[in-house]
Length: 427
Image (cartoon, rainbow, N blue to C red; front, side, top):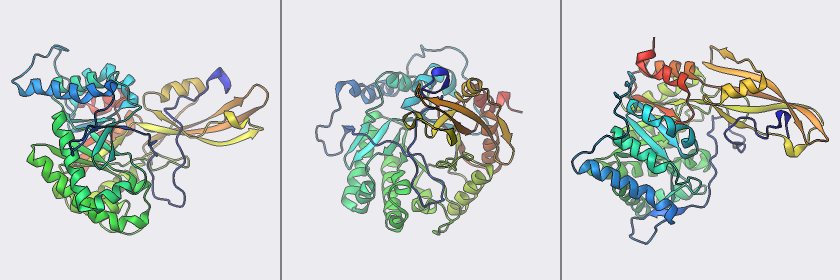
């Protein structure tokens, strides 16, 4: 155990190390776990276990009431919350629902789109609820969103092993089947749109695959966009940044071909964060964010469909040890959020320092690690973005005339983040 009998240091999770040999900013690796199918375009029996079945059924039922001619707003008769002066979207990860759900009814009216973040693409014909997403809170979250009239735009994550989604998109027949699977999923839920978050191309498949994957990705987005539009739905994509319109080592994640997909989507959500993952450093330094915005505008020719991803989190890295450490007790890299970081500062008597160049805070502290016999001191360093940092990044989105911002993520933020977002309390 470490000092204060605290087994884990106020972080969200311990993250695996990023791929080596690549100095491009990398995203955190999400664990890929076995999943059970929810829907299929082929008509096969793919119903999940009973504990998951209510999520989509409940969503269909709630939205069917709206389509049938209105409903009574029974949850909260208070005046609606103010809208920010730039459109605000947000992702809602299932693992943060314990924090986001109690405040969601208060916050949801300020949103344009909300993206439940618990659906995985697990095959050509299968979209599944993440098996780690418990029933508790999922239906309630969707019902609150519906009552508020916010656009529900579920994120679908590529949860397959490296190369498998690229192979699906490479074959016109399986690509079309996958499009129809997503189309059926959207129709079954009667949702406003779909957000595609296929990050395996960028972070698992390898750069040597990008030239082949790029045109297949464009063909997929073109076909999916047309299918969803025909049904009156929208298409968003959440993709890592590009830094220009080229395809060089300095161009960022050019596999996603911002320029070619722009005519076929309603929003491109720029994941302008995760600048530092493997080693301590800023999460989304302002120069990197601005470079990502400029690159997206150069690639698309227009900011009208661009939405800037806003980080409201940080990371906590080990920086070294003094003494003989019990290996089984050492912590690796963990995550913090704008909501949790204040508690960590109090626990470790740390004083954060604002770095104007990056628009972020950082602090160091020492952690005593012991197994009862052997004791050492582990140095830790934290970088994070709070409400002040959110405000600075929103200002960049305004300056460049983007179509909105998207918060990563509901449940990570605290009141200071909302104070930065809402115009009624902005300077």
